Every structure is written in C-alpha cells, then in structure tokens.
Image (cartoon, rainbow, N blue to C red; front, side, top):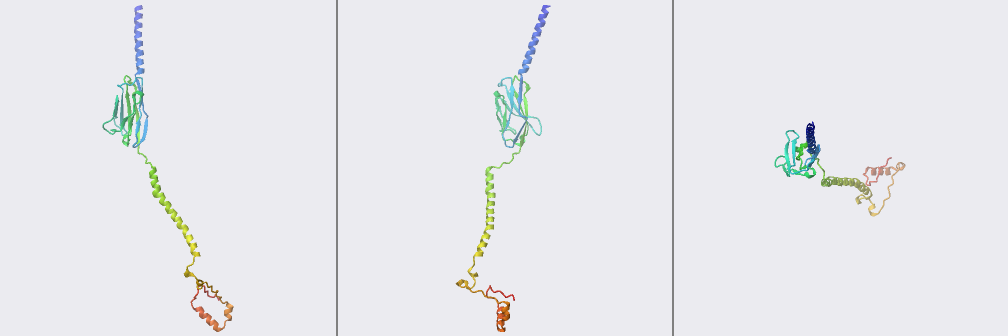
Length: 250
C-alpha cells in the first residue's frame, strides 16, 4: 500500500514539473511587434517606416527582420528588405536605392526609411521580426501608407519677383496718372494770369491807356441832326476795328 502511494506521488510530481515548465516556456516564448496603423506623406518626402518590438529574449545574431510590401491595387506581398546581423537593401524593383536601415535591435527598433516617396508607393507595409526562441505572440504588424501630390509652395524669391515686375510698375503708372490729373489745373490757372504780347490791346504796349469810348444813348441819337445821323449809320455799317466795340442796343 505504501509503495502504491509513493509511486503515485512521484508521478504527480513529474506532471507538476511538466506543467510548470510548459507554462513558463509559453511566457518567455512571446514577441510583440508594433507599427503605426497609417502614414500620410507627400510626393518626394522621406518617410520613416517605424517598427518596434518587445521580446523576453535578448536579441542575438539569430534575430531577423523582414519588410514586405503589398500594392494598393492588390496582389501578394513582396519582401523587399531583410536584416540578419546586417542590412540587405533591395537590389532591384521599385525600392532600389531608396531604403535605409534605421533600426537598432538591441533597443527593440527595426525601423527603415523610404527616400523620395512616389505615388506608386501607396500600399500596405508589413514588418516581421523573429527572435528565437521567441516564436509565439504577434511577430508581424502592418502600416498603410498614403502618398499624395505635393502642394506647390511660394518661395520668398518668387514673391520678390512678383513685387518687382507687377506691383512696382503699377505704382509708377498710378503716380503718373495722379500727376497728370493735378498738373492741368495748375497750368490752366497760370494761363489765365499770363497774357501774350499779341493779346495786348492797342495803346497798352506803349503805356498809353485810351479812354473808353462813350456809347451814345437813345436820347442822344434822337437829338442828332441829319448829317450826324448819316455819319453814325455809316460808321455802324463798317466792321468794328476795336474788339471792345459794342453795338448799341437802341
């Protein structure tokens, strides 16, 4: 009876050790990879594809990182970057010469950068990290990249050129127009005060002021004799020699 109890106790101890070891191994054999869900950039930008991981095991030479790309139009993912002790950038395809390794495995970083982004780079990027003995958990993570056309920017030099060739001539023309609107008034006022020598009346050029001719009144015309009246009408028919001559209104 005692032998049976001893035998059953030994079996239970073995099962307990196995359960604990399997449970402990499940705790340590986990890895988690994190990437941003979405990234937005403009055409021509340098994009940082961030990827971080946590592992219960210290990264060794056996650790590896793979980046794959699935186009926005669909299709199977294609691996374009690999890291294992050192970086292996793509040697062909659309990412040739445009991928740089920025990761640091000792700090749990497996990031890369994409240089000179294009509209054809739109799609889903997957970061996969393997660090044996961590083989469970979430070794992959996804990022959706959206590249849009770059908006045109106005530089300071462009603004200076516009000011020099558009605003400056407009300002000069405006000043000229305002000057022409104001100058004729001044010239008109001066023309009123200035009299040409030709316009000087007879006698004024010698300093002689002729007395103003007295115009006969209606009563005086009535009292004229016939000879004076005939001479008056004869003078009346002649063209006036003086611009100040005014015909009688009788």
